[in-house]
Image (cartoon, rainbow, N blue to C red):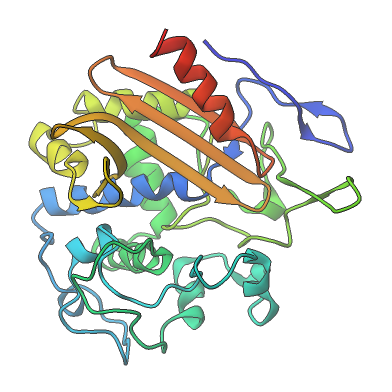
Length: 309
């Protein structure tokens, strides 16, 4: 079941549809996690492999004890290029490095390559975007493919996500929603000058809501990873709050050590994404928005109608 509201393109009054493709910001970090798990499954790295042993890029101030595990779980201590505790305006990042130059994973390097460590490896959970950019560099180095090509070939294609991809904002395909930011006077502007022109390992894939449902079905039915590797991907690892944990595949709500639901979220200027997957019910709920607000509120109403009825 699906429904759609609002405009994919405001000036043209083009309505959002069930097949509209939306950017999902950090909601696509799970694709990076699955890709890393595939490389582990193939024996090319392990979760305990040190960054210095699987990447040939120089990070002068990075701790030599950083591992794949630490990067996946936001416990590596690497400097976050967008520290949400220090910054609340993503647009500020692009004053010195224009967003239209960010078209590949390596284009992010000037934002953090020469920065000091934020904390030591194995430090408590601290959400970190740089860690996933670094994981993307690892994927490229080991696979010999660009990050986006690897994800599209090894996750989107085998899962059957035929409408999803990493699209440049200045070359969006048909049925792709433009993100909109509300201005103080109540009018709207697009987010084309607010985000990297092309998404990467820490976020920015374009998907349809139905494709994300297809992704969860493929993941849980062993079409992307083995049963054992899927279990490792989805196991709770770092305690975030009382009943919320983070694993290699993202957030999850845990009740007496059983996972109640897996939680995906993404926020960018003009982007708002929320999704939950209830493993016991094989139920996935997804809300994609090309505005910055209200995906969470809509998702909670959907949960009331479906899970808590």
